[in-house]
Image (cartoon, rainbow, N blue to C red; front, side, top):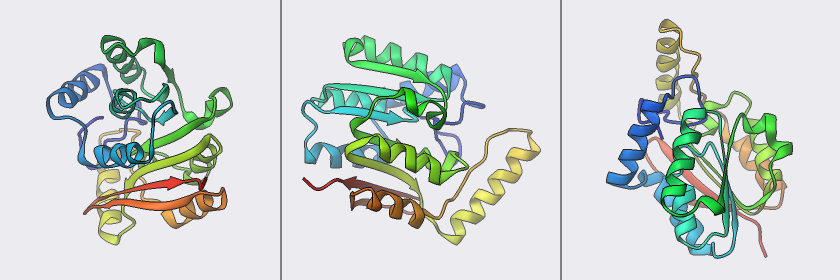
Amino acid sequence: MPAQGPCDCPSCPNVFSRDEADKDLQRLKERGPDPTTKALVDAIRALGIEGATVLDIGGGVGAIQLQLLEAGAASTVSVDASPDYVLVAEAEAGRRGFGDRTRHLTGDFVAIAAEVEPADVVTLDKVVCCYPDMSVLIDRSVAHARRMIGLVYPRDADWVRAVAAVMNVAFRLFRSPTRFYIHRMAGADRLIREAGFEARPVRRGLFWQVVLYVRPA
């Protein structure tokens, strides 16, 4: 996933070029996944991923997909708004021998959700902060999750909002369409719980939070 600025969400296609995608893949190969991504994957693996299907929304170069496939997931579907990231992720999955167990879609997940099959596990790693309408994104995502839904998102804190405001001013000055959103995640938590999931906090860092929601057996 792109490393520029606090918001490195691969769901923003406007600034994420092939060069950015190649750099992120090289970074993944050299250093492994980001700590927050690894924390989410470890939490999912601990609950059992063998034979499960995975939907990775804003999948980037495939960090989550590749790890869960290696851990025994049956198949993965990635939806990403950046065509360059989709191409890089698809090529890397094939190179690692997972080509027949992966599917990579290009587009806004909310717009194409009806075309995407539900999965046992749904992940949104640093995606919520790139999407203006948090409620509809969460609603569509939860509707696709059978067993688990995992999120990595910025903390809802005043100083984080201040950082976001400065970043958005800079984006406007440079005429970039990218925006960084700090949503009131209590609303997302309510939507997910109302769908029958229980929250299992995984990690709370200075900037990012990781939460895995699980549907009780």
